[in-house]
Image (cartoon, rainbow, N blue to C red; front, side, top):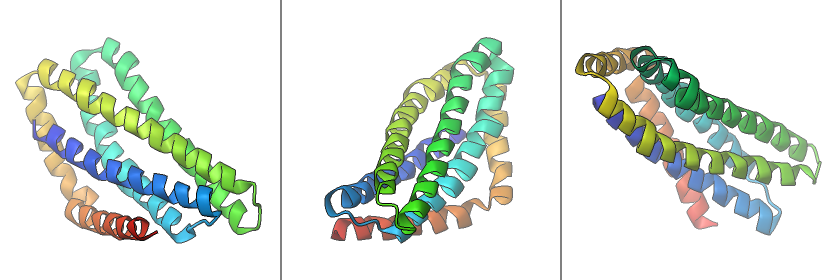
Length: 186
């Protein structure tokens, strides 16, 4: 199924950003310096690439098809768990952004919250991606019928224009590469 390949490829970019976020946290931890622009760029990537672009396709197309085709046991079990983790990730990012604002306004204790929310997000996403790549997607490949797989692939293809896939991919991979260069230099 091509849709699975697309999602797995996007996971690789998301995992690269998780490395960047952890390195930004190391800078706060060891140097007491917050690279605000870097954190805000990471939040932009997470919200618009990892969540809106990537999770949007998972939620609206992939998981919806699995739920419809494979029934309530899948929908109320593994899919519900994946959706709950998406929501938890959103909470960590919202709280990270709030902590960055507090830190910018002079709250030194907010640096602890920056690190804790960012690290909780990275830990959650590493585990989440592993479950999707090695359990959810494998299960879908084995259990969805050929017609359902074809429909998912077609729906992914149709979503390209709506999501401005090439433009979004290029924009956020460039942002990712810029942040990777920064963290490699500190």
